[in-house]
Amino acid sequence: MSLMRHCEGHNVETLILRKPMSFDHTPKKRFKKGHIVFRQGQSADCAYIIDRGVVKILHEKRDLKTLAVLGEGEIFGEFAIIDGKQRTATAVVEEDCELTVIPKKHIEERIANSDPIVRFLILMLLTRLRNTLEDRYDPINIKDLAKEIGKDFSFLYPQKAIDEKVVVLEKIKMESELLDGLNKRQFSMFFQPIVDIETEEIAGFESLVRWFHPQQGMIRPDLFIGVAEETSLIIPLGEWIVHETARRLGEFMEHTHRSDFFVSVNISGKQVVSPNFINMLTSAVQQSGIIPKNLKLEITEGVILDKSQTEKTLDQCRNLGFQLALDDFGTGYSGLRYLKDFVVDTVKLDKSFVQQITNNSKAAIMVESIINLANGLHIPVIAEGIETIEHAQKLKSFNCQFGQGYLYSRPVPFEDALAMLIGKTTQKKAA
Ligand code: G
Ligand code: G
Ligand code: MN
Image 1: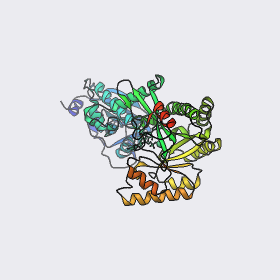
Image 2 (image 1 turned 90 degrees about the vertical axis):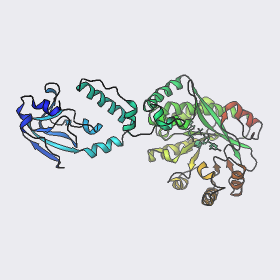
Image 3 (image 1 turned 180 degrees about the vertical axis):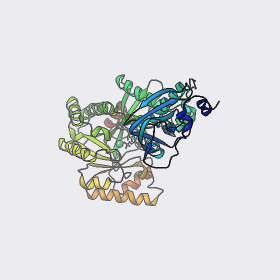
Image 4 (image 1 turned 120 degrees about the vertical axis):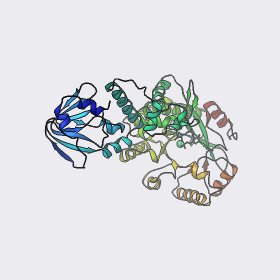
């Protein structure tokens, strides 16, 4: 039996006498008592906000059970827009109404731009609600829902095809495991040497976080830093990273007498603008007994959130004696402005440029120009992602002072890094 016939079988004149409205883009609509604004089972093209009057929401399968009585300021008709399915119920004017029409497109656009997990949760909720209304139990197919929100979560599982596994919930799971992992000390800092390209001596290290997950083994930061940044987890994680890096820097300093030795630590944009950032840095310095000058803060231009707040805080860091490095230089669009307006101690040339200098003449010209520019400003350049001797030789011919990459060493645990430092030169392609 169709919903319509079922409804007509009931003796509710108002439902039968008046036709449902058709949508014609008028922003305001006025309706008399008894008018059917829309009917259960119809397709939906808008939602409504009640400016005046009362609207009753009825369910036609439950002897016209009243699901809700809505008044001024309330919204209705949004369910079917959100999940793109038919109307879940019928809306009848109970007291003369003035309604503002909210076009489907406006809601759809907001949903499309919202956090995929929020979208997923809303769709799940609506599916459950539809099940309850219809007194049925359709199992909720998470895979289909994931497809509906159209988001590719394969970045969490790059080794697996997206439809092999239900990955939407994996992201929420990861968030909770991250916090647990932090409490259970599953994180560790690795260190990748930064060398003087001319002498191949170690000038410093970049500290890079690793997560040793009890089931999944070692997880690389590009898989979880983004998740941590989307939540506020990056704040406690980032705090641990800074403290641990500072502690290890202290240990390195006991074995090297070079005052210009440094360890650089990646700072996320969200961390810089967190209210406790400067206190956190100074307490890390105090607890580890290091000097701020030996700690270099790597900031990626792309992650800078609140520009003026970020710049203010970075200035404070500079005044406290910390060094600043512009990470992934070349990939953003305001890198040059930062060089002009900021005191930058180091430029880290992104590996996507460096790795093309031997086979792409444009990349080579750009890299040489960036190095000349930085040298002209007396800012040393660290070229990232050096993998071959040819990369290194070319960079040397461009007067690039420092390099980092698999040619010299991969990121390694602290003990291995210390051994390299004490041995003074790098062991090529160490573990
Ligand atoms: O070490 P690996 O190549 O997997 O790092 C990948 C990226 O993850 C780095 O380029 C860096 O942007 C980010 N990353 C690594 N370690 C840290 C860290 O300790 N803190 C932050 N915020 N990002 C990190
Ligand atoms: O923070 P940043 O985005 O600069 O981190 C650099 C990352 O790049 C490090 O985590 C490191 O694991 C990775 N890396 C370092 N050297 C090389 C390299 O020679 N080749 C490639 N592909 N990656 C590298
Ligand atoms: Mn970095």
